Image 1 (cartoon, rainbow, N blue to C red):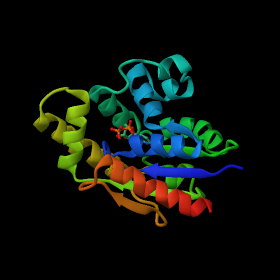
Image 2: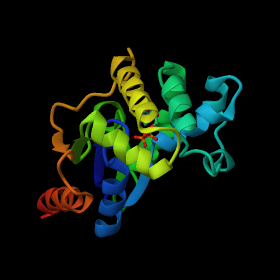
Image 3: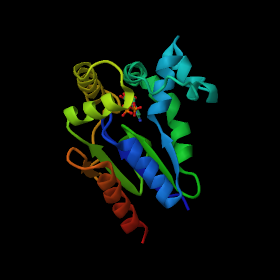
Length: 195
Ligand code: CDP
């Protein structure tokens, strides 16, 4: 039976860790949709063509988690034709038998508005920048904070599929939560919906 979980939120809020943990706990498949945008951003050339011709090799690049890939992703993600080219792949993934967790920015609002559970994971910009700084070891904390804020502004301010919680999303603020506590809350929510 398809069971879709939509996890959205800003950069480094904990979406990835929570999504992977949910997939593991409940045996669902997981798609990190940010990787699609990162791969388009890093492919170079015309972004629309890049999105239309994305290959498994593009998604296996070792530099997709870099700060530069995040910035490139949020730039190409403002282009409606880029987003449109990636919709079918994401919806097919969401509809698979056995359940799926998708994390991104517009899963609960645009890609899977009928998702069984929607969680909007957030945290203060300072806490998110500290996490991203520890994770990548790139640049200085001030530079990472600046990038997190610039990316938030671009993701929330774009005209097409902006970052915002779906009306029926549960808000999970991880500013003062350990990752274990955040994962436990999300797991409890899903367990309650599955019974
Ligand atoms: O891991 P992090 O939260 O930093 O970023 P990500 O999820 O890999 O996404 C990178 C960028 O891709 C975001 O800043 C968004 O601009 C864009 N994105 C999007 O527009 N829609 C999605 N479903 C996923 C990512």
